[in-house]
Image (cartoon, rainbow, N blue to C red):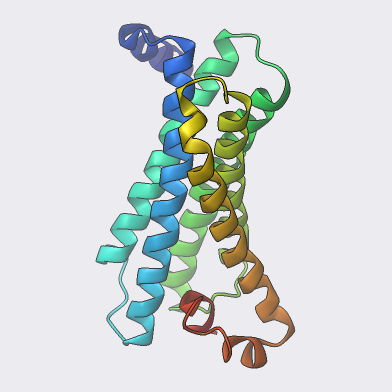
Length: 199
């Protein structure tokens, strides 16, 4: 049912494959960057003891980034179903889809967790899979841009690399908190404040 509806929508859009790939890759990368910036903003709010609720300003910005990645995922599903795509391009689109699904599932799980148990730290059963989904989306966007270097996406490649490195650094820092958050938060607290704001 959903695929039929999406098929009709995409037929009315009548975009060629190159335009769809541009939409997929830019939405995956920019959406990831929006999520990262809003996540840091949310962490700063935690440091300032601002009230935490589902529709706070940083959360709305996070949700808009997740929505952008979901749009990229929907376009990816449509393109993969209608065309024979192989190699790095196919892998990138699959990563965008997997990352988007992980963000939606674990984001919803995180919301339920907050409702049941209150505010948790960055090290939780929902945060790390959610962050892995964000990293996968960024990697997928990068791979699509890398596969399409001969197109107009070439100028977007450095931006996608920086976005992937930033989100991977954020995830790596949060995973490092498992092994000694007090020591690691002190020297680089100002750079990765989201990793130290709530433990």
